[in-house]
Image (cartoon, rainbow over all chains, first blue to last red; front, side, top):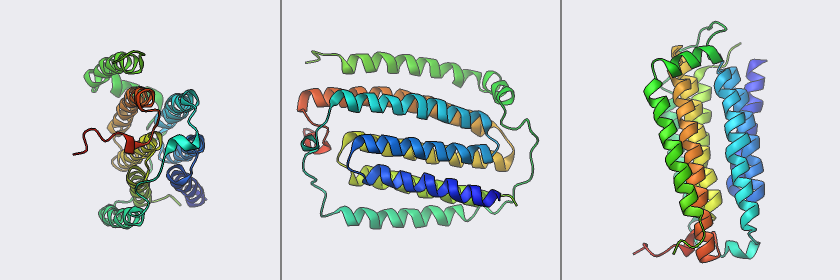
Length: 164
Length: 101
């Protein structure tokens, strides 16, 4: 049963990821990426990472991808603006080298042979992750606020009109 | 019947490869950017799978930090795309050839 859910979520996540990079329309890409994220959050829950699963849906599906949608709608790109595809002839090569990379990665992944054993309910729950965030990792956590501040300022400066 | 960790890692490898191919074959800046997001998500999946295997939640904290970085990157990157579109009237990566040679 668990294997069936895994297979379904994995197929949806992978197929929609492939659709993201092959479909012509950018809006379709974003919607397929949201579908891929939702399928991946199912996998996170199966790995008992409830906190990260919730955050994936909220932050990725809810915030980042909506930002993508806003930008695509704001730019109002027509098909003609996408221009000609200068890479048409070398595209098959990308799939070949991608297959080589995949073979390497799978070969490395095969090395993990450890069986997983059961964890208690607390594993991956919000209080437990929060204890780590505000305890062991408090300095990296605080530093992310500086990162976000820099990103906000940078985004405003970059997107401002009249920037030479 | 639990799913072995290898399956998650192999799925993560597949997703990462899709992201790499997406960056290479796509000429649309926005789609290239989304392919980078796919790669970040593949890394996140591997982190969560490994933290489940070793029963350490440090991986979950790393995923949280990666997501924060992805949010910052999306904000700045999309602002850059807006600036590029304003200057070049296009989001095709081929128009950005000033530093090509």
